[in-house]
Structure formats: structure tokens, C-alpha cells
Amino acid sequence: MTDIRRSVIKRLMRRVNAPTVTARLSALGMRAVGYTGYEIKNLEHHPANLVTPIFPESRSEVARPKPLGSTKELETTTLPPVTPLVFENIEGKPGSSIFRHGINALVPRDIYENLNQVYFHNEHEPCIVQDFRVALRNGSSKRIEKGVCAFAQGNSNWYHWLAEILPTVLLSRNLPGAYDDYPLLVPETALEIPSFKDTLDLCRGDRDVVPVQNAQLYEIGDLVYIPPQVAGPINTQDGKWPEPRNYVQNIDVMRLLRKNILQKLNISRTNEGPKRVFLARPLSNRMYNQAEIIAEAEKRGFEPVYLEKLSFRDQVQLMHNADYVVGPTGAAFANTLFMHPGSQSLVWALREYAGACFFSNLAHVSGVNMTYCFVEADSPITNSMQAFCASYTLPVDVFCQHLDMLLDKTTPL
Image 1: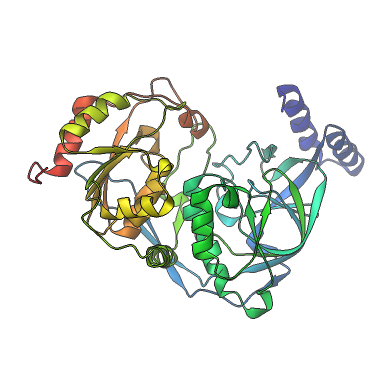
Image 2: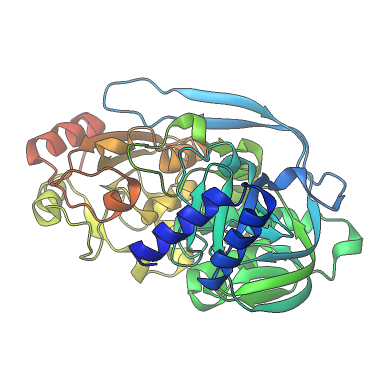
């Protein structure tokens, strides 16, 4: 979207609540440039029907990233039973968490309650937000008669698929029999990438699947929506950074997910493979001094591993066997979910992410002692989208200090 078009839409949005004639002209003007304005509402307050709860009352347990030498901090709240919602003739786009229903844009509760902090414009759903209004791009829709929602913003990212969407897939097995013929509506990624497909097949039971395309608008006649049991901000506005209060993690659902996958894959702890794993990553926009960090890790018996080169089962087995896992923050650490209780991990991340609980939450689920090291970006950053591409340097002496304390200098090579 060009800056000129964005500026025009913002001006028109401000006039939508003006006297009737001005509002209608403003709405027509927005449509002329390809957008429609909607009122942002909490999705959980606008279903056509409710389904009988499919999972009992539980707790949200959110673990703040733990710096070296600090103690573990948990934020715990009570969660109500998981009650699916049913929507009629609702429109949605895979890759987005926004649903269109009449004059309303319905968003999940975690987004609605943090509108002044989150940023949900993305390549699949270009939008402009002003207070409780949003302008969304118009487009033709494809019709699907019925289905269970298994897509959201970030659904092509391994972490967001594994930790946020896959629990929904697992819980869909508990839906009443009246919904047995409702297929799972999953992003194409879930059938194209082996690790995504493997986890989908491990969790979906006998339910059919229908792939849907990112950025394609769908009108769904009867949509079953299971409120997400794990949630956290994907992108944040300028000057805002994630905090534990922004996260939800249904601890019982996540333990069930972990148990289901480990059992279905018949994973048990063995002496095979490296016990000290360095999660290396290919060259990318987010560069750091990986070579010299790996050199120090190898002196201490760590073996560099590129998880994306392994089958999903081999990834899980490797993580479950490891005593120590170290590496930079990134989607590979989503596999912390499968580590053995009592194992250790070291993660380094930009200082702005001192409150980002993505991987510390998964470490809490699996009983892993995860330590964080925070670093400075090479150039100033003001939001999470800049952080995603920010390069940095991890001081070698700082890394060695953290790693040696992790190993406690007593564990034999």
C-alpha cells in the first residue's frame, strides 16, 4: 500500500462517524480506492451459537524469559472451559486473524484487548487501524459450506503452527458428533511442508482436511471456531514490546499436545545422537557472529545441527535425547516442547524481547531449565518487524560465561 493511499484512507476513516451524508460519501470513497471500513469487535462476543465445552477449566501459566542467575517467574490465571463458537456466513483469510461479518471485523480476544499494542497488518491482510475501526482490502471470495478453523495470522511459521494452531487441531477431536463431517480448514503449508503435515496427521484423528490459500478471502457458511489456548503478539507497534501479560498458555492443553505427539511417534530417551546440541541456522537477514560462537561451543562438546534438514520424527528424537540445547531465538526452539524434563537450554535474543514468552513458555511445559542471554541490535530498532531482520553481535566472552555456568564446569564432555 502506498503512503498516499494510506493517507487518503486514514482521512476517510475519520469521517465515517460524521453526519450521515459525510459518512456515506467517505464509505464510497474508501471503496473507490479498494477498501471497506469495519468496526473492530471481540470475536468471542458475536457467535451465532455455542458448542458444548470440549475441554475442562484449566490454568494459563506464562513463564517470563529467565536471565542468567535469576529465578523463574510465572504468571498464572484461571481459564474457563474451552467452548467452541459457531459463526454463520463469515469471511476470513488464512494468514490473518481478522474475520469479516457484516459491518464488523471480529478479532480474537487477545488481539482485541491489546489493540493499542499489537500490529496485525501483514502481507496477507493489508489493513489500517484507527482506534476501534479498521480498513480492509476488498476482494472476491470463495465459498466453503462448513469447516473447523485451523488457520490464523502466522500460520506458515513453525512456532505459530506448532504452539498456537496445532492445539486447536487436537481439541477438534473432542467436538460433538454433529460436527464429525466438518473438515479442518488448514493453510496450504500444512500439506506442503513435511513437518507441518506430520504434526497435522498426528493430531487430527479421522477428521478430513481442506487446504486454504493464504490471502484468499473465503466465505464460510458454517464455521466452528475454537478459541486459541496459546496466544501472544506476533508483531507490535512502534515503541511497544511483548510482555508476559500479553500471553496466554493453557498448560493442560499443551501438556496433552506434547504427550500425544511423543506417544504417537513412540519417542523415548536413548543414548543415541548428540547430548549437547547447537541449533545452527542458515544465513538470513538476521545475521550474527555464528561461526565464532559455534567454535566456542564445539570446544565444549556441542554439535551444530540444522533442524530443518531432519525429518520431524528425527527432530523430536534429537531434542528429547539432548541434555543441553543452545542457539539463537528462532522457530527451531519451538521444538523445546519435546525436550526431556530436567534438560538445559540457552537462548540469546535481542534485549527488546526480554518479555517475549514464546519459548520460555514451551520450556515450562516440558520442564526444561531455559536461560536467556540478551544482546543489542547493530542498529536502532523500534518495533518487532525491524527486530525480525536486525543483525547483532553476541560477545564471545558473554556467551562463554553463560555456557560455562550452564555446564557448571562439572559435566564431562
